Image (cartoon, rainbow, N blue to C red; front, side, top):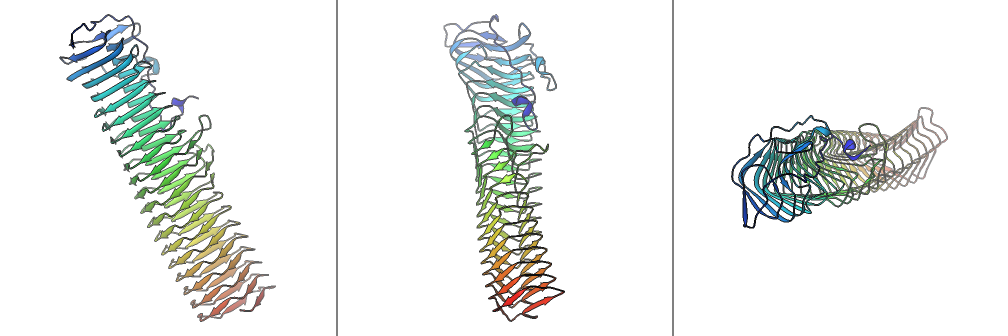
Length: 544
């Protein structure tokens, strides 16, 4: 498997054009400017100006290759298109690798500083190709359109400013290079900007309506994606086995699939230490931000994530093909996550030691936070309000900590645990949820301490089929049914709680055995203060 084969949402295979040594052309003389009106080989440094369009060209033949403008010299070369077009006979977006044989500009035999300005390259297999040639290649006010690949670069330093990539099979593909794209339009291509095994700086661009990926990094590290408008692509921004990237201040909107996708691969390594911050991630078709499969110690912070078609932010340890790789020690903090169609934040199987801290999570169609099969999750200091199902829903989760959250006015339970053992739920404000404040089903050995559970529509605590849990030091007040209700729940400790002013019983044990109910303040409830019924036995009820 190679990098190109492994890219998600694949890109068109790139042609590697060979050097064009031996072409016959017109060399630059001693004058300051050499005029060009047709295809040629540039064999001397200097300034070249195109004086007319070159239309429907076959290029200059060399072996099995052809190119129109060939730079085959050292030193500094400037090509000024003066607004003209260098047009080929049509790139083949469906061609195999060996069939990509034409280029508008080839700089593979050149070592130096090459600047290309104010020109359009169209209808070539590769509009501009630099394979291990130009040490510094700069494009300014260049348009690349209707090529199989707009620009291909291998090695070197590439800087593209104020340029347009439109209707190419792939707009830009670079390998083992440093690539900067600034203030450019990338529109209507099959694939957008692809930086492979290198470093990219992508700043201030409009990246829109590209079929597969708007901006993609694979392997390499240290890239920056800043202040771009990334809209209506297949995937907005993709980071694949790439480390220490910064993705910030972008507007990532209305992409067909994920807004921002971070993933790794077993063959090429983790996506590690990337920072995704201060972005607007709105209206994407699937997840707003999605970390999946071999993602380690990434930080997602200070983003606005709203109106996405599935989850706002998702973290899980396997990809869409079912291949497993952990998502470990990622941090999701201080984001505004609202009005997403499904869950606000979702943590799935393989998400290990994820910290979800100080986010505002509201008005999502599913759960505020859904944790399923994840390990070592911490939810700390979040505001989880007004979501369409539960505030927090944990299913088959281990080593869960839920602390200091505000969980308010969610449609069903405030906090729900199902088949979850060994959790700590502490110092949360759980109020005004439509069903139970805290619901516990088939979950053992959990600790619920110092929570304020008030004004919920049904029970304050509903513990069903769950054993050896501890409820201690909680305030359980003004709930619509029982304060604390145990159903078929054994060997639980209910101690030192304030259980007052609930509409029905304060504490009810229903078909539940061997529980300790001790030192609780039970008063002013609508039903009996403590009710033991339906064959419950072996319970100790004292000092209440």
